Image (tube, rainbow, N blue to C red; front, side):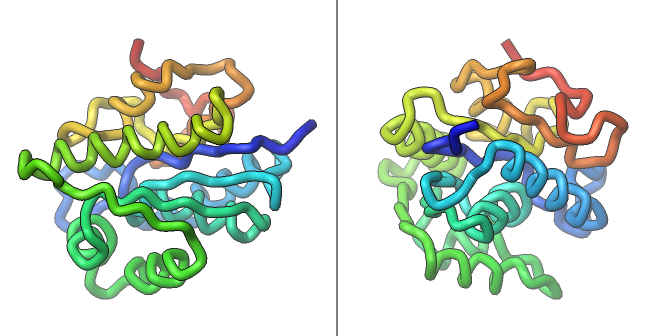
Length: 197
């Protein structure tokens, strides 16, 4: 197998402690990270690969960290300027997400997309998703994709479901892997979720 030139990292953020309905609980992080490692090893991701990520706590950072551990180049496409992005999408008091992000950002190529037209967070996240897709497709028109996703519509625009819909990928495409953010049988194959479309 030839290592993929580009891997898009996407998926849910780890839940805040007060999230009423769990989507990606912190207890699931070790399992998700192990499944991500298995996918990257299966694809032989390494120095010839670039992992493109949105940089948020949870799926984005886990996949980017695991890609970096295998020697891949990392590109982060942030929806907001650095401090605002960390406040909105990374930091949770009492956790190490902010430190993990800072460590990865020092090693990565960082693009700040931002809320250029003042239309709000949803537009900024949607633009960041567009920039991620553009960055990955500039390397490989058909990038590999790892999605840590529950198969449901998100909490707002610019979410994982929208991005998967834009990419037009679905199992059993060997370049696409779904990982359930809450453990289910089926490990890292299709994770029991069906992409939209």
